[in-house]
Image 1 (cartoon, rainbow, N blue to C red):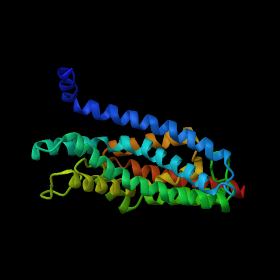
Image 2 (cartoon, rainbow, N blue to C red; image 1 turned 45 degrees about the vertical axis):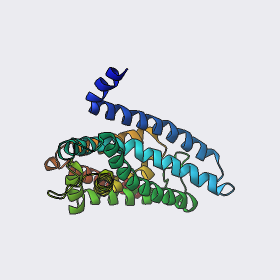
Image 3 (cartoon, rainbow, N blue to C red; image 1 turned 120 degrees about the vertical axis):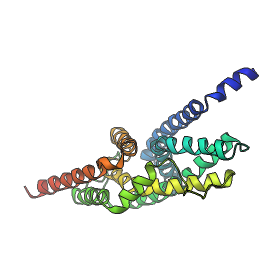
Image 4 (cartoon, helix red, strand yellow; image 1 turned 90 degrees about the horizontal axis):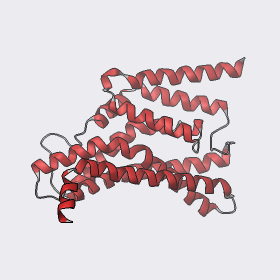
Length: 251
């Protein structure tokens, strides 16, 4: 049995990816369950239960969408730790880094939950939690599109694509330092992808095709070199989309 585990952990990257795949799969199941349950609850009568279900839906959604995009940074950080601090337990460092990343997206999920609940009270939404107002939809598309063209997006994308989550000469050993690196990577990742998540309110927070398409785009955007300017192309397309939607209101 000992030989089996020794051989298993020689393939640490496969173990890490497989573990994350299991976590993501569980998040997808829980996301679908909590979203379906939230649609059956009266927000006015069961406010606490509804808020808890909506937060669970958003949290699991963010974990399912964003954890896979953090794999390159997680594996690279572990490889560097193995070289510079071989005494540290790699599994513990990976968990610490992942937790730091999760903290940032948990905060985002909490903010998105608040927006979701308030929007549901003030704006008409479909059963799939998509905003029905074309005017608000235009604002969302323009906002997300313009952000894609900003220097802030470019800077966060470059940092997010870089698998090294620390400045040269500032490496620190230990789980606490790994946690801080995970937080730093999560902040850049949220700065890169956070505004795109607002598109869920346009396409439908519970619309599976929209969620999957957005998750795939975010992953591709991180994998393709920033010099290819995919984010700028997407920004232009979103603005054109908004313009066509505006024309449909006129004609």
